[in-house]
Amino acid sequence: MTMLALICFIGMGATAIMDLWGWLRKRVFGGKGLDYRLVGRWIAHMPQGRFRHDNIATAPVKRAERLIGWTAHYLIGIAFAGLLLGLFSVEWAAHPTLGPALAVGIGTVAAPFFLMQPGMGAGIAASRTPRPNAARLQSLLTHAVFGLGLYVAAWAAKGF
Image 1 (cartoon, rainbow, N blue to C red):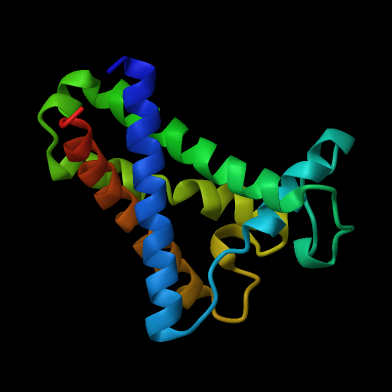
Image 2: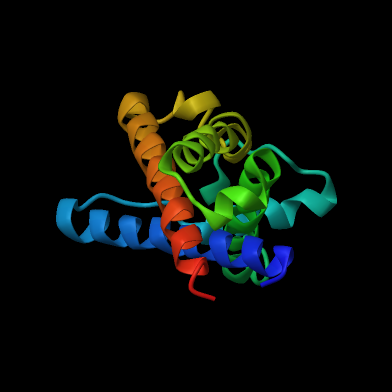
């Protein structure tokens, strides 16, 4: 498997595991996950120079926002897998260990805390949401699951 194929496989696999976690969490505990349509809306406003919104849900709807959001979600997962292999080398993927995968996965929570949530109107680390600590915990758990997904996907990639 080429390096790019390996990064794509691990990133997409980890993102799919994170999505499965979100689906299970919603079915078992109720609650609401991130609407990737709104992520797409946020991104689709960027070419017009709009990077921050008071509330992305009330921003004008953009064409193909759901597709943009889901595509970005998986591309970001691939980018974070590339970061993992960039930091710990392709040798890590040949013999995956949980520590580096969890460290990168949990570290990626900085993206929603300091980029996405403020840009979409939720404030730094969800500070403008009704229950900021609950939102922060859910983000942290989701990104820890992403880290676990990086580890599992790397093990699965060894079979190819």
